[in-house]
Length: 228
Image (cartoon, rainbow, N blue to C red; front, side):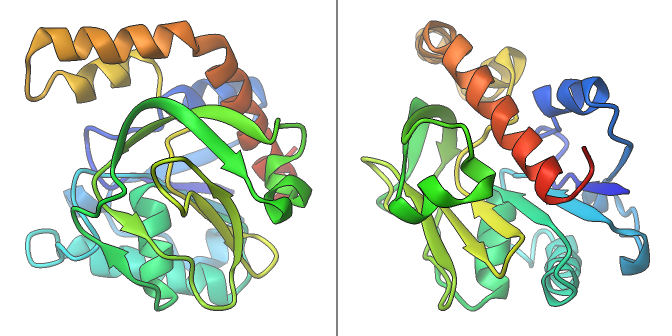
């Protein structure tokens, strides 16, 4: 079964919930921030770990993150297909010993370009995507690519957008799972309304390209995991 780990009540599966339903993929979402236990590794056929407002170094305020990192370590050790999105990717990098920088100079917000490296263009996660595609960014922290991992994507503002470790474990910095409501929710706190409107206008103007790339990436991951 596909396991979804949600780290923050405000960062749900978004449009990916719709796509999984359309692809008839059975999944279960776990909420460790609410005290829910993570599943035994034997029950995990593939895993997606979502983002969150917190950072990897915030274990004092969010002790459940240590358990999520233990879960990620188990997934990597067993070569279970894995996709870490934003915080999920940062947690993967941290587990693998790479530096994750809080309030880094590479923060990004908005609907922005992601550029594949040569390795990214050849990687099955990005099959069928253009070398440059758009996705949604909402991060202050950033990861370095772990030693031994393959650097898959970059952007004009942030050099490390995606990496792969082993054959089937991926960390990405961008958010392919958001929908318009999440863009509105994230950009409305704190105000002003003009800023929210600017983020929504940027998203709406590129929505067709964004949703096309997002769906392709998810379907590619499901194929890697042999779920479709």
